Length: 499
Image (tube, rainbow, N blue to C red; front, side, top):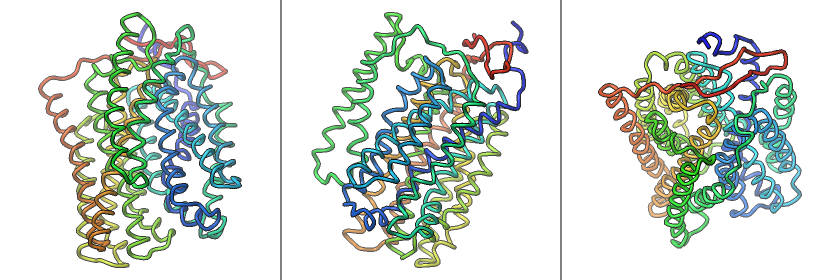
């Protein structure tokens, strides 16, 4: 079969279908940060204790991370369209339930379900992009996805501030969840019509339930002490870390056994033989450990240390959000030409931006710090856009399409673990200085210096990979879907991995 026959015929519906995926991705990622500014409203309107507030934030991240890999593999086996629509419907219903929650216990339960639903949706998005697009088009699609990741994370505090300012502090927290409903319903209806009906690649494969148990228990043991670092004050929580290593080691051994016996593993360990995937996943983990922590730390400082309102605090991150959108759009176009060099430039820009905020706090402390930090955040935003989408493209570019969902799940699980670890480490630095010395400015600077150090780890990995590529390029192992193109129902026939 020729190369031209092997690729789907151009169809505008691919881009419309991408829009559906991005809308779902936007609201699921928005919910990782929008709730932070709603915690005072939640305390006032529902009487939520500190422990409940912690679980509203961390419980979402926890179940999000636990669902990613099993959901990605299930999408590979049974069809990504079905898995995506199920996850989106569950997320929308759970959002409504959160908004109507009559008490704190119910809110935590619905929030856990909402996080799991987001974890079902996320790997289907990257898998569908792998199936719907090839070559430079795929890079552009991941560029748009990178824009959504950056903008949704950065604008969460602003959106939350606007909603609470409009609805009032007593009920404003409910609208943080209700805002998902119109987007979720519209995306679901559009998805029924636009998402392609690719054949499932593993209808005759057994789902690796024991592998799900080992991986889930390992990720849970790894993430729990991280997401609960501030709430569980004793040192006993860190005993879960060795247990996590044992469980993840057992998972690795079990998956190797599955492969030797010719059974379908939950995660194809051959993915890690691809240097592009392994290095890209490590860069992503390290970067998200620093990237998401910036907004957590900066919002704490502005609201608790300087006295900004939730809305004013959200407005200060607009330069980052806007620049991130521009950077991601550029990154999607340039990654095919410049490859890992673009990621190196992006990470350097983010590190420079973070250090610029440290300098701004030193030179212009107090209520004007938001204005002084605008330029550094702009530089950091451009760098973030040049990092996230190009790194995603490079990480998944040689992954076989029939394993794209599981690969996307592994990649995003690393992002969630990185985010939790980063917040645990950096907030420990921030709160320790605040408790001992009471200077919020210095506490923020020390926290941001820790962030810059984490970003530099990702930069070192990217530079090392770039040098390795120059000395010894990785052989091509590309895999593309084949078939006669999109039929009237949006289907592509004969999806299979390439050589």
